Image (tube, rainbow, N blue to C red; front, side, top):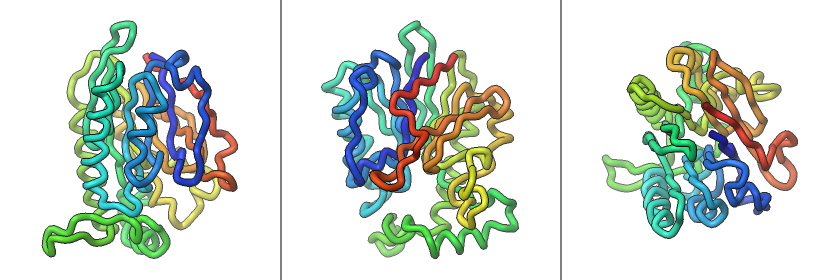
Length: 271
């Protein structure tokens, strides 16, 4: 199966023109959008209007900017469902969900998807509290994303403890889904990175590294999905953990902070 892999297009900073053969499905029968596509709930409609083939997408952190996180997810799921009714090929907005479909050659495929917020413990559990405090001080996520406050029946800003809880839910979901028998191709899609191997240069050395990735190497080694796609890090990655290929193809911020290695026609073959 041939798939396009994109993340971090950040259309809120500027539009992107993709080649006709990418949009039409001539090069790949499935598009994977691994988050940070656009803000203000525009990502799903853009994807539906841009691509003719099947599209699976998840939210990143930026999809929640200026919004209530869970309301955004619900609205994006609904928008994808509505768009699918007017398309030949389906589009899905996924969060802790698995989408099973069949490739053009008849092979069963499942896409296991979750944002996978970080657990802040990339460098060991003893470093978690410090990483949470650092992220809370420096990252826009905790000032620009709201969540429902069940106690006061309103909304409040996202906090590191919310992120930790969401990571735990996502990690359990991924484990449960990967452990379920499946005869076909398994693809996992997250926004945050599943391994320190995705971090390079300043990301690996920076004080916020643990906000970008979690250590799921053992999980990947155990279950060996064919492909794991992620975003969040504005540097390209393509490596293996065991037999699992891990790919990140982010565009970055236009015009001044674009990823020079972004490939707008990237095709990944999975079998």
